[in-house]
Image (cartoon, rainbow, N blue to C red; front, top):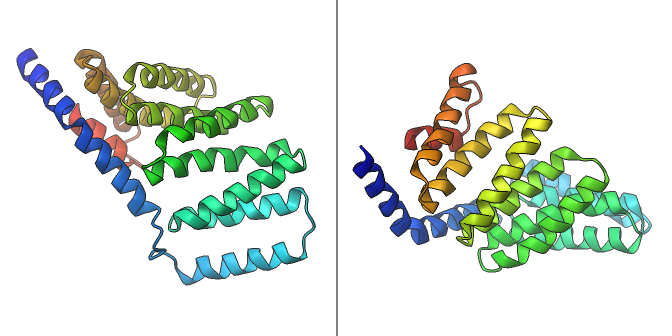
Length: 232
């Protein structure tokens, strides 16, 4: 059994460059610059928000609307999502609107990862998002940004830092009693630990995902959790 697991770990390590490309490719499919996933409701909502922009003066409300437009574009148009998030962030900074900086900072970091070319540039945005979230006592956004940092380090194959951040995320999720997020994080941490070479601990976290899903009778299971269970 041990030999089999060791062989699996070596195989995972050899496949990591290809897995990394697949992760990035999947992100690019989800956030496509071609805008093929745009539907009429998205288009109508964007048109409505842009009309609101035209009557707003520079200030917090305009920064919020710019952020909303970026949010709508996020799933299908990488360039426009990035452009509007940057406009929202710039205006929030200009007007000293700290709350308004939080979401576009985190989103710009995510978009850097999705782009796949400038992954290392995401850290400054995520770090800023964490600081803003802590200052506003927004633990949900703090959890999201910290999770993104852990993911970014794993994509850069800096497993030590990735593991360190995943443990920080687990502690925070436990503090706020977010069991669903904890289960998803366990699965991500399990994968990183396997690549790192800690097979025993990696399988322990995969088993933790299985325990969570079993207790909840697999209601609202995510593909990521099911994937972690299949690896366990």
